[in-house]
Length: 116
Image 1 (spheres, one colour):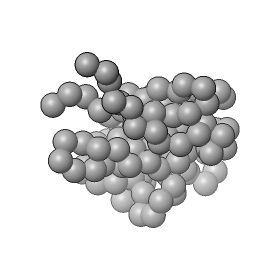
Image 2: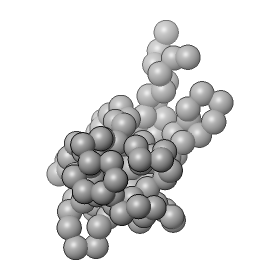
Image 3: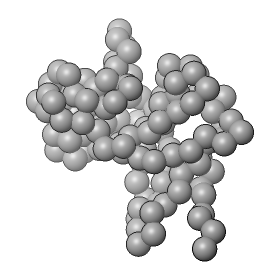
Image 4: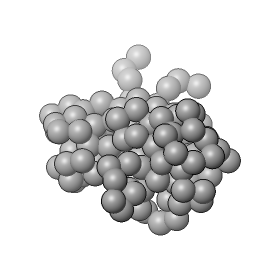
């Protein structure tokens, strides 16, 4: 059976060292993820803080700490490293954002849903 891939965006749609919000199917619902650009590649995390399972952002793409190269939860100001999603400051220190599997193929970012 051929694996279904969902196009999310072009890698050039995300500025180097920045992030972008994307929607992905999760069973019968949709969730949001945080796409992180890292040079010519990208990785992604679920947009859920491990503290209370609330979205990190209040409005689209507003994830970055204004003075540091970190992701920030707007609810309780938890700070997460962009490379691995580990919380380094705030109420959930040591916990991490859940990784979402994505692929970059010919500068396009895809999400492949897991079979149910």
